[in-house]
Length: 153
Image 1: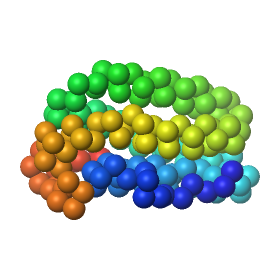
Image 2 (image 1 turned 120 degrees about the vertical axis):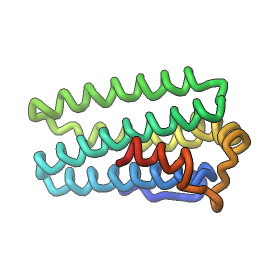
Image 3 (image 1 turned 30 degrees about the horizontal axis):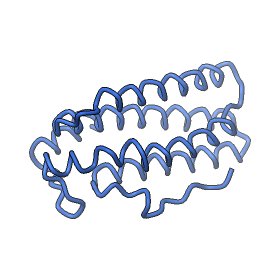
Image 4 (image 1 turned 90 degrees about the vertical axis):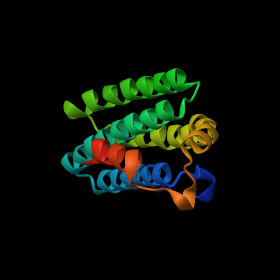
């Protein structure tokens, strides 16, 4: 698999979300490198970090949507749940020694881009309008700072 490069068409315009999405892309590229090295232990380590970070990102994103009164929060949560179950199956296979990285990377690359451009793009206006978040004016004080600490430590 080739590396996934961030492009401006993946920007949501909400700085805090874009930073998290870029970190997920970094993890995908780390997973690709670990897999290319042939080190299954390193590959599984990065896989687990990627999954942990992504689940935390989902929870953060859902809280943001909830605070914004996003009307399709339930549907968005469902998309996250289905994805999380799919990835858990990959983790289960990896835990018994199977190298799932090539298949997982292929799926993740397509899913992530489609999710950001589709599902995530749908909530941006609601969040910006109701929470006053703009890309250059994100304020990490107040509730946003608290939420970041709560989810990302």
